[in-house]
Amino acid sequence: MPHPFAVCVPAMPLTTKEFRQLALALPEAAESAHMGHPDFRVHGKIFATLNYPEKGWGMVKLSPEQQDMFMREYPAAFSPSAGAWGRRGATSVRLKAVAKSAARKALAAAWRNTAPKQLVQQFDKQFDKQ
Image (cartoon, rainbow, N blue to C red; front, side, top):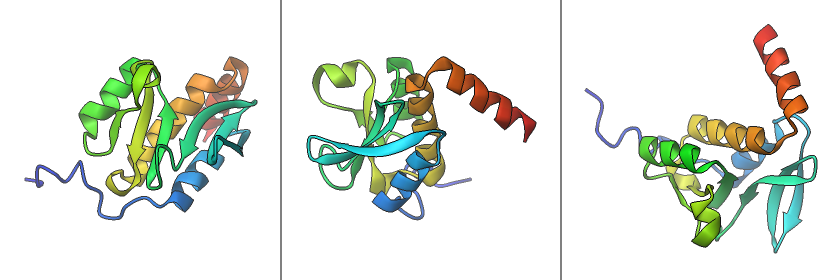
């Protein structure tokens, strides 16, 4: 039987470099900056940030339902961002507590929530062919 915290604490913490690579691997994702920290955009719209609210953290723009699912599945890694943004789904990611696979899923969900529907459909078609 696995240790009860095995799902919560990854063997290797995610680095800022890996978070960046995962975000930029998504179709048409680009890095920019906003309020003094890096952000990741698709078609000019932010889907994730890095080093917010401080170093060692990221943020992904999820729906409230997605946020709830990630917080239940990975409680040590995901929490609502502060204030109204957090209530609307903005989700903080604690990099030293998140597994790469969970970060990849959260970033993909945030990208899907933000990307134009036609781009998401193209991505889905390409993914289905693989």
